[in-house]
Structures are given as C-alpha cells and as structure tokens.
Image 1 (tube, rainbow, N blue to C red):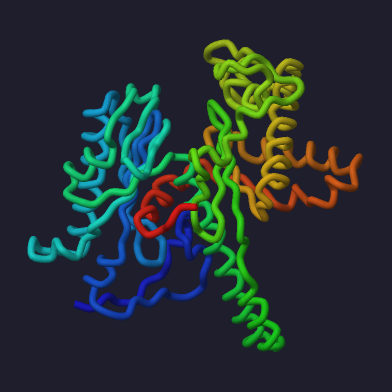
Image 2 (tube, one colour):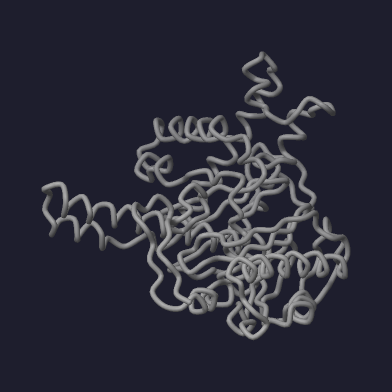
Length: 374
C-alpha cells in the first residue's frame, strides 16, 4: 500500500509545516510513514494529553482526559490515552496485528515537579498527588515501550523550538518560491532560504507560577541540577513573600498567583483583569500593570542571561491573549524609551504568545527520545 499525497493540516497551529502551500508528499509505503511517527504524553496538573505526530510534525491523533491523582492513576490515565491514540492511527490506516511493529517503539512523557530524566523518577508533583514515583518504569510497563521523561516546561520549550523552526523553514521556502516565480533573483531567494534559524530559544511559562526553559540548537539546556531557567525565584523589587521562603521572588509579581493576590477576584467574576480594568476596576488595572511589568522584566532577564533570540510565552495566562500581549509590549516600549541599552535589545521583537490550545508540551515530549540534553 502506498500513501497518496495529501495537504498539511495548516489550520492547526501545531502543524510544524504550517501554512505551506501545496501538497506534502510522502514517498514510500504507508508503514514507513507510521514508523517515523512519534508519541508524546503531557501529564499536566489538571489534564493529560497524548499526541501522535506524523513525519511532517502535524498531529495524527490527540486524546485528552482529566489527569489521575496519585502515581497509579497518573500512569493509568496516560497509558489509556496513549493506547487510544495508537488505536486511532492503526484504525485509520487499517493496520493488522502483524503490522504492530511499525507503530512507534519509543515514547516521551512530561509532567510537573522535579523530574530526573536519568533515573526516570519524579518528585514533588503536588497537584497530581505525587511525592515520588518512577514515571519511566510505570509508563514503560503499561505501554510496552521505551519511554523518555522530562519536566513539562522543558518539554514545552522543546516543542516551541520546533514550531518556531518549522515556521522559519516555511517562510524560507516561500521566499524561494517567490524568488523563482515572481521575477525576483533566485540567488537572493536561495540565500534567504538558507539563513539559519534561531540558535537559542527560551520558553516562559506563565501560569499559577512562573518558570522558563532554554533550548539551544534544538537541545534542552538543563545544567548540573536541571534548574536552568528557574527565574521565578529571582528576588526583585516590589515582590511579596514567596512560598519558597524568600521575599520578592519574580513569581510574586508575574504569575497567576500574583494576579490573585493583587486583584483578589471574588468567585464568579472571572479572571480577565484587562476587561475589568476597561470597565473601571482600578484594582484590576493595577494588577494587570504589575503583571505585565513582571513579565517584561522576565523577558529582559532571559535575553540578558541566555542570549535567546526568540522567547515564546505559554501557560494558562496566555488565554488572556492580545490584551496581555499588548500590555507586555507597552511595558517594553516604556522601558526602551528611557534606556538606549534596553532599546538595543529589541525585546518587543523577540517574544510572542503561544495560542493556549496548542499542545506544545505533548509535541515536545514526543521529541524527547530523539534529542540530547545539555
């Protein structure tokens, strides 16, 4: 059986080859296509997702469910979703039991907490009811696959890095096509098409807490203790007491918990400080300003300490969308207007918000078995 040409699912932002014109061709048997697929599991504090990626990076299957509580349930839910995703792909391609060897033989998984990729253990994933568990062994036994594991923010950084690289590749391809078909210089178009992508990408997760991760040349940067990017616990002026025991951590002004503290939203009022501020809520306006200032400061810290050319913002607060992005840009513009040094960093051009419905951590998890760590 040979796989016919098909078009990329460019309507999905998590398609690595997004917005490419024309069909994507897969040359060879359908089994070869399956063999190149990847399986990723994102075990979040409230939701677990299992994604299977095609060779072009688009999502072949995506299954989600509320996360389990406690080690046994965490494993059971993740395994159930993975098997459902694999079954969906098998059914769509009419595979028989004899074809099972063509399905992914390895998987990647991520979850919050202190994750040790070398031992496979996870500690202190409080929201999941996990004090300590062997995630790798549990998933390997449940799925019959070799499993690589990572912290969820680091996996999301890896997924974001691949998305940005794919988008740059699509732009370069479009430039080549434009140069060869619109009367432009083909030589110039080819030079544009071969410009290198970013070398360093930072992913800033703005949710209940604040954390970052760094990817360099497609590899997650961990450092000796795996704490590279944990900028949420850098003390800054204007902060408040932090649960970590310090005072003034960046997380206390740039996170969902900071928003709760500053705004103190009563139940049922929602959590959009920008909309509330527009309606005249002065406390919401103050909370939004502090939040945007804290995130802007986080971006500056990441650029100065990692040299990141691109910073992608993800996490629950990104659901605030354009209002949050505009607020951050306003803070960056204000800072740049008073400092030539800050202006030279061009911070407003380096960051973007990731749409909240992109399963970036699952995508990154799927890539774990094939990437090295620094």
